[in-house]
Image (cartoon, rainbow, N blue to C red; front, side):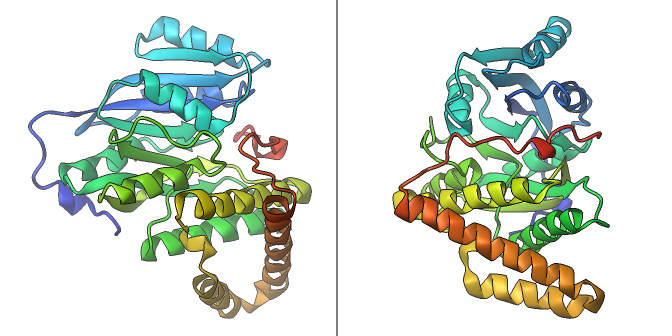
Length: 308
């Protein structure tokens, strides 16, 4: 279901408290920009009561930047983990500390638009809503092949989410659970599964914009797509949940629409399809043959620093 601001006609008399969780590993290039964006959010229904940054064994000055911000705003708190145990474990660390009834989580290599948190939280005036997610828009140059590939995949993600909510990059959810499986490599999808099991609804909010940066080199792109595929296979086996991007007929239909939408882009489209198939085969091989579950993944360095 897609959310419209018309749903806010019956606003709550009290604001909705929100705990924001940010998850970082060597994000010195972006963490300050992200914290500025969070502190500058335009809020009416929502109120940010705390911003908890979980920094997992960062060595590049990320922690020092967060501490500097925390000294100027008591809502900001740093949890410095000595070792990297994966993002899902970091989310569980955040959940153990968070106090608000609604949580927003995002990686430290993203930047929300000024009204994103308000848009993500507003649907909770409806008690049936359990989780919301916005629309990621990459900052990559769409003129290059890698930029085209990144924009294509997020464009397909948007179109999938309009049909069947698939939430990622920055999401919010009600505190109806205490933890997610720490070994999940696809944390947002694991949360989706839990929320649906609780009988609550997912809402996709395309007006809630999150800026991110996709891989700029092919090896990073394959590494990322390979890890995600293995994570989705783990999710299906362990949480009995399948995300919409694992629906082959839906993906075929969306790619077909792209094929006939702009014939000039057909060579690039075919290239991306081949890379995606190759990456999914590698992800299948990792999970099925090698029995690998990449919940502690290698960082794709070219996805960092949104301003570069």
